[in-house]
Image 1 (tube, rainbow, N blue to C red):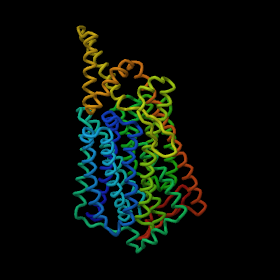
Image 2 (image 1 turned 90 degrees about the horizontal axis):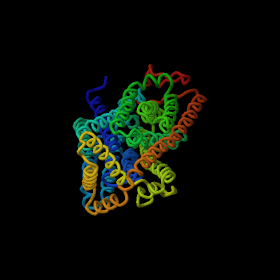
Image 3 (image 1 turned 120 degrees about the vertical axis):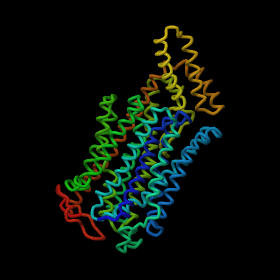
Image 4 (image 1 turned 90 degrees about the vertical axis):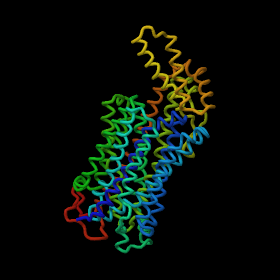
Length: 541
């Protein structure tokens, strides 16, 4: 039976993922607010979200080399302080914008999300080897339970955003809510003794850990986990934003997101029995097939309604459920001598891939497809709403001018107010067209002034009155079509990644069958007698 100290360490670790998931979820929901308030393109927003992932990867790799030397407790102090910093920096973005404009706001959010990723990476450098040490004979099952904290945090973050949307509060309040789980995990871990990793307990030296990394099989697993990071976290960075574009309802988008992550949270608690039936690799193969099908469905034209979209995200949600923790379980089971370093590199590679490729890449794909479609259906609208500068997230990609979300935010506000004015006019016959137009122009001007610096207010009002408003009736439907096409195309193209993963897992299944079956190695204690795999992979854990 586990001691109270061990239980507290495990559930505090669980809460670090709750905090990470809440931040990730709320950030995805407020991306549109950042785009509208500061005038970012989808590519720029993708770079910000990407930095909220990539620092994670480098941090977990760096600290994995020193985790046992420095001690897990000291690392968690570093993580806690970084979490405090990310809240502060992100909330300072409006102040930075008021003093330095769009560029200052970008770098403030960029730095804030970098701090967030560094904090989460430091946590993960501790919690994965800690869980593997606490449960050496049932790693895959308990790593899945640990990582149920991630979708749990995603759900809590979405619920917070959904509730606060009803109150009409700003994005700053939503972001500030993530302080709660951060403070709780900090208090739970404060002053507690941490065990050393399984490899350290077994006397495995750092040279041996590093040597274990030279395995061709482990390098192949690293490659697969890079794909996991791209498809799971890269897509999750954008799914609320894209769902809102497809369904044109922020609350419905949040509800769909909540549903898929409740599904993930629940299923991760049952990973153990599933693994015993079909083996970890069988589970990963089935997940990749479902992930491919779900993303392909999301990219199709028939998933434009709430019911069909929900069906597609359910398939995708089931598919992505077991990717990350089961991959960590496979690496820990097959390469225990790699210790915290092996787990750290696995998680780090996944996060670096998500940060450098997934978030920015999917944002870029949206801009690329949307602008091609917009230019095809209305070249004048394209010219009016393209961003002033061309850019690409990675060298070698063609630079493009994405959609200017600042202009689109004003157009969206205009459309919303127009509908309200029309409703008011229908209820009050004395409300004339001239009065409606005057009120409409006044309201749009106020909305612009709330979101811009003084110079930008002048520039944007001039653009809106001379270019935007006279063409709003023509531009609005064209912009809507282009954004829908961009979001769906990005998801459809992303389906190729889990398809490649499925091929990789099938290769591994065949490889282990030729070698007598998949079998886990245990350095400390002994393999549990009740943990046997079936489905043609007959070996004890």
